[in-house]
Length: 621
Image (cartoon, rainbow, N blue to C red; front, side):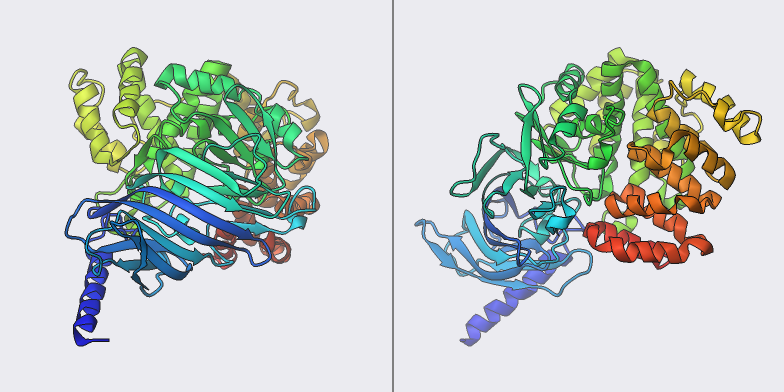
């Protein structure tokens, strides 16, 4: 290599280091999207279940904003890169240099593609690669972990910054792109993606997809397995394992009505179809709002449509989050708070104010209870710190109810005739854009507070956004049915009302959840045993109810619940349930050994994200 070439390579490497670190816009991404943005992605991959890898290439179409830039910085995590090509002005592909920085535990590898040797900035690059068997976004399930026990299954969870573990790209919500894909998979396995899934596709010659609307990378999603499909309406359907498809189709029967209800409030659904995929039990969260194909946990299938608020929540993301997206994860509340607020409005529209109020009161009560375990500095919707590190971010879970409470406060004070057009305008004016809190505050001041200054003072706005806890001025939701439950619970706890006399025939799931929340750490083991014997709570098909019963039973020392509890932990992988249960078990000396023995058997069944969370709890962190 000539000296001039060495100097140029060294200069490019130095520039790449500076561009990836010193001038990063999103602290969780190495991408210099102020210089170049990806406008489209095409992936051509083959799934190898034996090796637990995806291999092939990704083709990125580039929009160069800085005409002098000659380095393309991408995000990757544990990808094996074989070569990189760029398309010249003559249409021919030429191999170009690339390098990977030292691995960072949080962000993975920065990938630098050196384009200085080309006569002009290329419009497209191709990266040939394969994923690691331990890719953080992908879970490869053995047949035994599926319902039929016959065929394997694989699914992705890209949020928040794990898309980079299966596609090399600009992995930041600040960049939106359309995408297409061709996926090869073993015979008799169906491939689905967060794109236009063809209900009649056979996979012959590969499975082909197109996503015509621009999305951020965290909404890139794939599932491969023994999957059946059932149409629910003109633009809705559900995908699931064959043995679960019937139950899923019944549970989601109101989906078409939900889409219509949301449209009546916030404008047209802009994604074509709204389909859903029910994943195996190891899916780590309740739902993932992947556009055109929401991913859902099977734990929400209760047999009585009592947990359909989860579907309403994921559908609501079609406006808040998917359509209008937080520009970085510091502004997470813009995705989840708005979605949580919209969810309540959808539920009210379909099922009436009483159902909505019950859900809202429970949501607010659990938010207030959670404050005891969240550091004060993490209780704001966002900090005033510069967006330079995820260490500056606030509590993710609290953002859902607190921000929704903020929006509800605006609605209550302004009135729906004013607030509803205001919120719809936010979605319409920022459709397919990535936004910050500052942009919302500017929109709020200009489009609501300027005309109605008494709705919210600047001091209150400051308190909601940057203050700890829930402002004292916040009006709490009150459900008459849940209020009546308080007296019943108090009477039962005191022994005045025997378990046999509890009139629960008309209780719905929300009432059971509140009752179990309120007796946690108050009821004795004997009382929990009586409840279990009378109502079969340890065997409830409603996982939200079962979880709350198990938690209360652990805290009360009701050890006879261990057998069904173990079965629950072995069959459910949703973090919302398993992480608190392991934490509760570990906190009890008498249950610690039991917890360790169960986790030793169950760990391999959990998603990598769940494993990481439970590992921390089991280590006392």
